[in-house]
Length: 196
Image: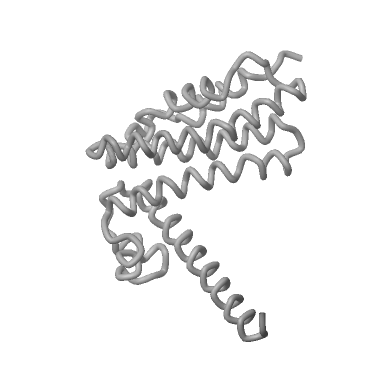
């Protein structure tokens, strides 16, 4: 390959990276706006938070459903990618598990609003739910296995049980200001610890 071919490939790769980064910024902004104002928030609010024009939002996501689905998938991916990174960086597996559960809980509180918006397309919702489980169950299992192997937690809780329990504690959290799902999830995760 000659130098002009390499530089064209490099430029194309750089543009793809920029496009992915811009889309990430847009999806993070949409998620934040959805948490603050619900999934029916005006697109101009999302555009303003992302620092882009409204046309940019519509160019990437022609319909609100496209945007909601993309936010859901983006949040699942963010949570999935965080697990191994936390496990590598944390001082102990239990600390990584605790931090990941905090991220997962934050996602679930947001997810309930997204889920309500997607329920009208039941087949599409079921596909996203399967994607959610396929991506996140192995991550949770990896964290639980590491914390179990280190002797920090009891061995009798599965990833599915933990995620289901956390999910149940998060139901309704976004609509009841008196209810603190994070506090109760913290109690649940603390209950995994082995007695000293």
